[in-house]
Length: 206
Length: 206
Length: 216
Image 1 (cartoon, rainbow over the protein chains, first blue to last red):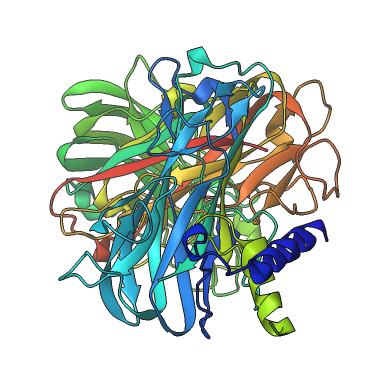
Image 2 (cartoon, rainbow over the protein chains, first blue to last red):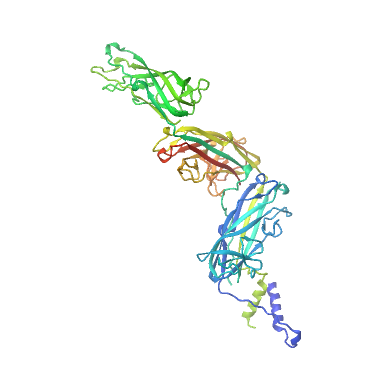
C-alpha cells in the first residue's frame, strides 16, 4: 500500500507543478507503451537441472571438476509476432569465480563453490532455423554469440543479419548448462554442501 | 496485465545417469573370441561295433551277460588348437536295463535288452599322453574319470591339470566298449531279436 | 487526469525495476549436493569375465546360445553409512541383440552384426550387508523417488533403474544406510545364432560396462 501512496504522491506532484516560470521549469515525461501481445518463456523439466548427490571423493582435488553437461529447452511463445529480449539474471551474484558464468552459491556463506556456463544452440523460430544473439543492454550491440553471460539479454536473429532481433512468435532453443566445481582441495566439504545455482530469465519486449 | 510467470514445478530429474566420476565406479569387461576353427569328431571303423549273431543258450538266464569288449578310437581333429567338449548322447535313452549306462533298445515285447559301458583307456593329445576329463554340470566343473555316462561332457585334460579342458589340436580317445545282455529270464526271445545301441558324440559348447 | 491514467502511471512507477518487466520470467535452477560420503565399488578379477576361445561350430546356427554363467565377487566399501543405489552404463551401447536396459552389448563382428548380449545379476541371498542376517533388494524406475516392494529374488542390474538393498522384506521405503556390501554376482551371456554372424574370422566378444554408485 505504501508503494502506491508514494507513487500517488509523485503523480500528484507532477500533476500540480506550476507552469508559471518557463526558465525555471523542465518537463518530465513518462513514456512507454502497452503492447497487446505477451511472450511466455518456459524451460523444459521445469527449469531444474539436478545433479543429485556427488561424493566429494569423486571431485578433482587440484584441477576442479566439470559436471556432466545437460541441455534444457528454452521456449518462448508469443501470442502475436514480437521482438523480445530475455535478460539472464544471476540470483547467486557474487558466488561465481567467473564474471562470464553464473554462480552456484557459497559454502558456509563465504566460499565460492564454482560456476555454471550457459550456451545457446539450435534456435528455431516459427519453423525456421535462426541464430541466438545477445546484447549487454538489451537494445544495442547485438551479436551472434554462443555464451549467455549473467546480465546479458538474449534474442534470436536471421542468420544473415545478427544485429537485429527478429519478429517471432514461437521460438525454441537448446541451452547447454555446464557446471564447474572449483578444485576440491580449496573447499570445505566436511559437511554436505548444496550446489545452488539459480538464474531468472526475464522477458522484455523490443 | 496478465502475469506470465512460468510455473516452477517441484524437482524433476534430468538424466538419471551420474557424471562419470572416478571413485564411485568400477568397470566390467566381458571378453572372449568365437573362432571359425572347427573340430570334427570321428570314430574308427565307421563307429560300428558288430557282435554278429549270439545264441540265447550262450546267455545267462538269471543275470546279465557280457558279450564282448571292443576297442574303438574316438578322434577329434581341430583346424587350430583350442579347447573343445563332446557330449555323448544316448539315442536309445530309456532302454538300458541298467539305467547307469547306454541302451540297446527293446525287444518287440518292450523289454530292455541290455546296456553298453564305454570305458576310457587312454587319450593322446597332439602326440602327448593326456587324461579324459568329464563334466556332469555342463562344463562348470571337470574331473578325471574312466567311464562315460549318457549326457555328460567329455574333454581332454592335461595330466597335470584335470580340472579344465586343455588346449589341443588333435586328440584321440581310446575307448573299450563292453556290451551286456540282460538276464534272458526277463526277455522274450522266441524269434530273432536285434539289438541296436546308438551313441552320438556331439561337439558342444561348454 | 482521469483515474485510468493515474492508475496507469502508478503501475509503471511502482512496478518498474531496471530493464525488466517482472511479469514474464522463468527460473533456471542448477542444484545438487556434495557429500563427504564416498563408496568404492570393486569387482573381483578386475571385473574381467573371459570366455576364452569358442568354436563357432559348438554354437547354435539358428538359435541363440547361452554361454556358461560366470561369477564375480562384488564389494562396496563406504567411508560411513551411506544410502546408495547401483546402476550400470553400457560402454557398448546399442550393440546388444535385445534392446533392454538390462542387456549389455558385446559389440559387433567385422560385418557390423551384433554379437550377443550379457546381463549382470545380483542375488540378495548371495549378498552380505554389514552385520545383517538377511538382505532384500528393491529397485526404482523413477530415479529414487519411488521404490518397489523389496524381496529376495535375483535381479539384473540396469542402465537406468536404480538397484538398492534393504534389511526388510516387502518394504517400499527404498535402500537403507549401508557401509559394507559383498555380493556374488552372475554374468549371463548369450550369443546370436551363428547364421546371423560372420564366423569366417575370429569374432571378439567385447563387452564393457561401468558399474556406478548413485548417492541418494
